[in-house]
Each structure stands twice: as structure tokens, then as C-alpha cells.
Image 1 (cartoon, rainbow, N blue to C red):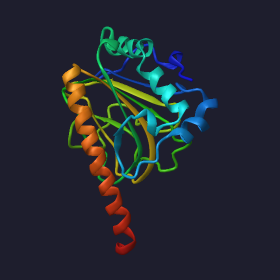
Image 2: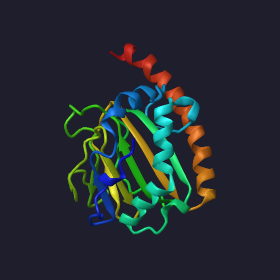
Image 3: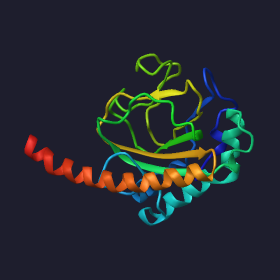
Length: 215
């Protein structure tokens, strides 16, 4: 269901960055969205095969396989990206706390994001921006990316790989693949992700309890 031929030939400046459309087979859209987990909290959760249906698990396998990883790496100036461990996290929804400008941690070599949303009627809110600095959400260095089905962004982590988005709350189906520096970083982030998952579930319950009372 993955279409690597849709990747552009080369990355763009000011840091190694590529964007692409049509990287997923349109015929797989319904199955992929149906297989996406319904997490109780907002944000990114570690990919667990038992949480997902077969189509989504198959796509994750393709996204982390050597041919695709190396195709991404070649365009971003990373030789044989597949030699590095790949950490996959999934996001079904966001709240307005997400989207702050950042560069990613130094343990990430390359990050790729694949979007599964049928459409994006929310305009700028929640659309990914690549930025010139850590303080100005409007200082865009490339066209912003609406998170609609089949779009992919990938970038190499650098000192100036600033990205973020305007506040958004609601569904924003995203697969994130982060190729990490080594196995120790993978183990550390996996442990942290499991702890974060438990905390997000708790926060999700609190949000659902609080909103009706605050309305």
C-alpha cells in the first residue's frame, strides 16, 4: 500500500526536509483508518500490534523496512538509514497543549510523519509548519503541510530543524517513525513511551470528567 515512487528526488533547505503527496494507495484509506487505535488520551502512543488492525500493522512494517528507510535516508543525506533502530508512535488526536515549536531530541536522526485523515477542514490549525526559529510560528521556511491522507514529511534532525503547528484539538491521525542513534536511545524512549501512555490515559479520563462540568 506504500508508494515510494511518490517521494521527491531530493530534499529542500534550510535543513534536510522532504514532503510528498500520494505515498499511500487510496484504496487502503478506509481499512487504515478503521484499523487505527482509539486511544483514551491525546498525543503520540507507542505502536503496539495488538492495538491495531492488520492493514495498519502491514503499513508500519512497510514504513520501517530497509527499502523505504534507505530511500528516505538517501534523500536526506543519511547513508543506510535502515541500520538505525526505528521507533514508531501513533497519534489519533491532539489537544491544544500540543504543537509547540521544537527541533526534536538529539537521539533522533530522521523523523517521518505519515497522515491518514480523509480531509482537513480546519485550515491552518494543526497543519505542520517548518520554521526559521523557536519563537515565531509564522516564520515559515517551507509551505505548511495539511495532515491529509497520503501526505508524508520527513526531515533530518539538526540544530535548526524547527517545526510545530497552531493549536488544534480533535482527531489528527498520524504515524510517526523516528530513526534513533542507537539501541540505548530506543530502549530509553520505549520505556518513557509506556510510562507516558499510562499518564495520557489518566489525563484523558480527567479531561472527559472535567469538560461536562466546566461547560
